[in-house]
Image (tube, rainbow, N blue to C red; front, side, top):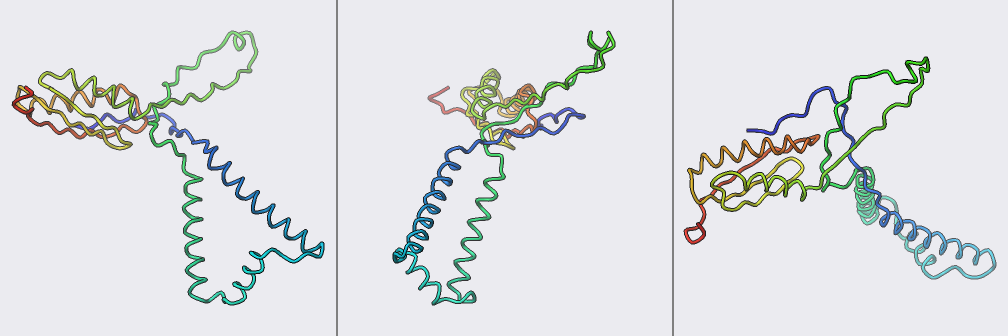
Length: 212
């Protein structure tokens, strides 16, 4: 049994984006320090002082290598790979622990008092977005799972595309308990109103003799 599909006719739900304030501040500080050091060195050279040792060493090292050298190609490939990873991370929404929920269903359009009086204005309704943490969703589903007759204990883990349930039963047939768990999980996932409902995966085992 799979989770119910979201209702048709709804607009795609946009995920929350992580602010990433700390990484952005660290990158800005590093770039500012590098730019300040280079600017100081350039001003010192124009003032008649010798360039810093690191810049002279870097210039000498660059003179010894050609663009086609293996060392240069390897370094360029590593830097390109790092840049691609950073670009993907910057464009990704982040906040993977938050599951997006469906927005409320649009209500039938009704004329307001201003429109009835002849004023055709009216601001569009603001977009409503909601989400639930994966741990909170797991707690909700575990409460539903523990209500199934015969379930002794249960562990629920919620991922973006799957809900894994490992339960133990101290009476009833395991197949009957598994069927009830699948039914309850499907109903619980539907009540969470997730934009992308995960698929449940249920494992049921007999409780140990000393724990029945």
